[in-house]
Length: 169
Image (spheres, rainbow, N blue to C red):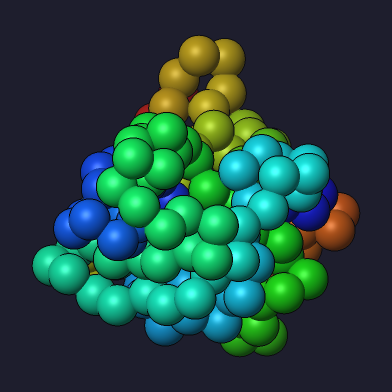
């Protein structure tokens, strides 16, 4: 499992005092606000101290100790920022998308293999697993009727597929 997870992208400057507009790749601004430190690499080597974060439409306006002017902020445009998973609190039954990618999806009753999670998307109703097998993609909604167990440590997701979810051969 990756220790440092993508949380968003600094897409522009905001004002003249070094604030920046962050495109959020996490759930919401409240998740972002729990961090005191964010990182500019996925190894945690290059850190920024987060002073404030406030919502602005679908983005966040963030302020870092190290960035005090628009000129300094310009240097960070288009940078991806990461969080340390140890600094975050998530619900016990929640999972990071990064941890789901690569998991094997199997039938909870027969252990038949449906493929591996290639991506996770969300169009509003629920997360949807993009499961790939033999270059074919199937889409599985992450709802209790279908997804029975997610074990990211063992990299396995057990499902009970509903009729028509997979092509009948």
